[in-house]
Image 1 (cartoon, rainbow, N blue to C red):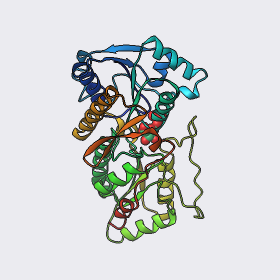
Image 2 (cartoon, rainbow, N blue to C red; image 1 turned 45 degrees about the vertical axis):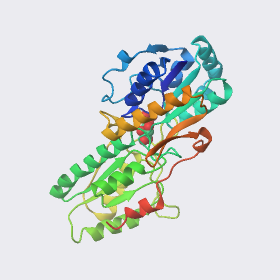
Image 3 (cartoon, helix red, strand yellow; image 1 turned 135 degrees about the vertical axis):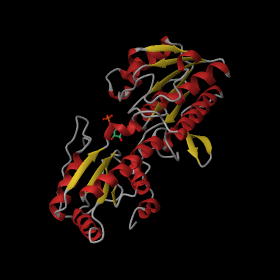
Image 4 (spheres, protein in one colour; image 1 turned 180 degrees about the vertical axis):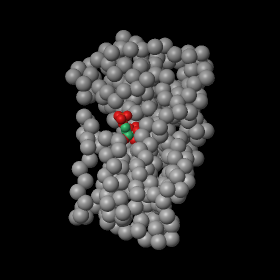
Length: 340
Ligand code: F6P
């Protein structure tokens, strides 16, 4: 078989582990040729392809980012995009395709899988961990580790200066990183999109805590929102795609806490650090397992599905399971972040 491969959407640690597994397993075990496309779906549209051998992927297991490059382009949103994808599939004589991406990239994979008569398998990656049907996505574990370490480090400087420290963490739609790193790092207050908050209540909690303590740590997800009917009007600053820009909610929460409590309050926006650098052992393992499962699935004739971790097992889920949905932080985990 001749298998195309791309990474799309935001990068994350563990992508190279998946690429390496696909190329090594595909060429050595299954005798496939693997063709890598640069910069996500844009590379497929532009026919920007490169043959990949075992040597090309040697040593990349520990490397962050993606050796193929990535992009947020969706073929169905570019004029003539789907036709260009079809042409590239024909020109490259592809008999299978593996697409490593988040929500948007996998949605496009589902559409391509339906439109072209070529088997397509997806692999979920996103530090946000919000892909439905899988317990974890590639990159999430590393992001939580980085965010937890950052919160750990904020404690000593917060305490030394008698400050409230707000740390803004990634997660526009769901608050997986903020909630789990917040709990693991001992944040005093955690604000996630799943639980709209009342800033007056947040200020009351901080004032209460400061009767016995001289500092507080507040972890806030990028997509956290004030509850309807509360006194605080928050209008996030949006980027060109209509998404809140990094630092937007963090700045407003920081200012509001300082105004309402009178305590000196400082903001740390962790930003892209959460997506950078070497993957944890868990992400290397997940990337490798998903890569192996994806290439085995294509060779076995599967299509229109993505790899998913369910308990201890890697299984295949149909694209319909995740399309148009968000995996929210469950109630039990949100509850576990209260009153600690
Ligand atoms: O890939 C997920 C993510 O890191 C989100 O957590 C974050 O909100 C977004 O990507 C940032 O996107 P961009 O790389 O386009 O700025």
